[in-house]
Image (cartoon, rainbow, N blue to C red; front, top):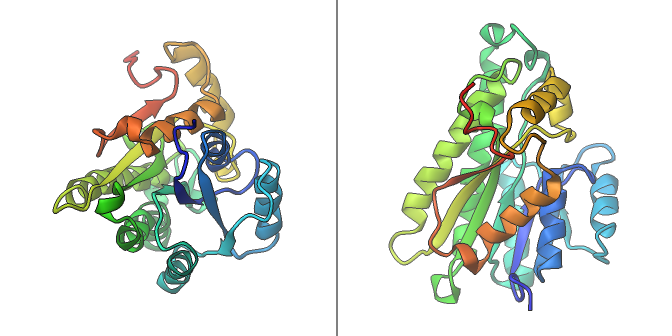
Length: 264
């Protein structure tokens, strides 16, 4: 028996085998879940995502193109889910973007309005947009649903070079809390939580200036004196998406080996 047997949901954000979303998909599969996938309709992204998903042993995966900044694109994805399956149990939001030209030391004060708003839209508002569309597909009578998103400590404290992405992650974490409050009420029974994972060389993370230094700093400072693994983030997501966490909502769970508890 798996923790997620009989559960079905959608994962946004796999880019390759180094994505946190990839490790979440891996853990969900190990626990019996059926995951659906999207890919950014750009360049070779469909091929990359398909290769990663099929590498998990998922044959003929359910996949759709999705530009999360487009309401029409999100509508198409969730309409197709409703048509094909009727309902889902979970959503994983693991997408973020900011112009890498402003993810460098001493550039935050130069961030233009359009770069700032773009980071907020892609990295934070999209969680709200997905939750709006997922809610009707998560009937409370069927146990409700669970939504998980991915953040980083740079949304709580200044991480030099993380810059506008840190501002966007702060907005994401507060969006999580407001959604959790409203979606848990009036019989909706949908939980919303956030995983704050350590720095990781994902496709998006590689664009952050000083990423190697951030990882090395975590290894020196964290309680466990190491960096977290993708598998540890994946397993935490399974906990938050499964019935084991039925009383947990609106939380930001740190999966970074005790980095954030150390003051100096």
